[in-house]
Length: 319
Image (cartoon, rainbow, N blue to C red; front, top):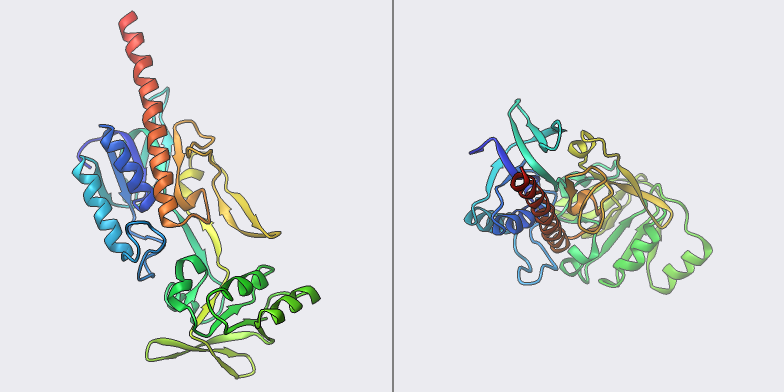
């Protein structure tokens, strides 16, 4: 950190944070991005549905973004922010990093993302983002026409099975610990050729570092090359909570899928001077959407700073 006070400190250096930094740096603002180096999509081999960057490795996309941001004068440092606090009057915020260092900012943009909490089945975490998947738009094309399993762990499992059927005609729904489908849902699954297997899943079969099957409590192994799970999406909201913001439960299909911090369409939160963008405030946002949200937040923050700069200039002129 080259200075002690910035126009904007951005907490989180993923697509949303770097996009916001690029917008603000091009607006000639002093910008510091503090990134803990834990991108959510690190296990994935490629980014998809990002127009102009389709199939770019996640690390490469971030490296390109960092180069663009620093090229316009913004700073990017690797550190973990543990808290933020409001300074007296209208002086902005103090940001505290792990180890005790601090830096001040007139405005904050928090883009810390979320954590995917997986069902407690051995092997899921190790294969996450490779053959253990959740988003068909992120990974469906890559496993098209392969044997796909869907782990039943909640009310959305039937919906997932029917959705992934779009990419393969060999889809099996493992009941696992999820609720039994209704008669109507059984009919839908049968009509689409989705098999239903009873019994708890106890692990995965791995051969030559690839998923080859799903193991049931009975010992039976069902050959599969991909397994779809419903993760719980929990926002990394500690920094925002330190400023008094409270996570909100996100529901889908009548079930809670995670928590997020509420913000308006520009990313402004209920805490004055604090914006949020990306998965921390929108659990289902993909990378290109997170980048767009960072752009919107950056523009809104610059507009807010312009208003303050003008107000201060008028007061100085009158004085």
